[in-house]
Length: 298
Image (cartoon, rainbow, N blue to C red):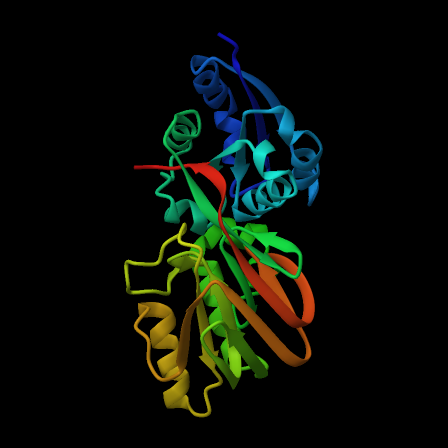
């Protein structure tokens, strides 16, 4: 029987560089699965997207290891392949927070996650698109959203997800308010906000933003969170309570939609999966239902 051709892409700098020490053990897992493996270590940003775009269709399975940024790049590359040529995707999370990995029940231990990536349990999950750019689980602007690419790797390594929270909280009192107009298939409204987030995950930056268990990664819908600009210390406290507890209050506007259009009077900086998503006055965000098949935990 022909061996399964696998492309293994890993970011040697993700998290604390833990993959370097486990690489031999991970390759042994792949060899036991009788894979024919091509290994690629990324050295620069966007490299994973390029290699998947150029060679991804030659493989039956792509396995990537790194943080949410590495997965974002691989997902981007996969979405640029014709749907019938997209290989299934395994993910070995070695980053600081790994929100998407949490959503598909991947373990934190590298070798356990490698076993899943080399296994057969897989499912098709949704992928987002904003103005022609793809993302795995979140598109956002405002408070917290620049934290992941402005916080240094050394700080992330030392403090883990707390680094995101500390950096984000420090921005809250000085964050610029943005007048946004939001349109979905169900509603249109306008509001002053300090944070807008369209997500396909129960947690972002390690923060549990939804109490409800029915946030699904495969139903073709996004969940949106917009935080109204606090006008006094009481309202600021309500914002903090929501970010820490996930319990909505009157400072929070939630939505559930397949497509969201966000318009602002001036250009606003966005992040996609924690990566720099550029500046936009108008963001059209669409859900591609069950676009990529990922290997998942049980």
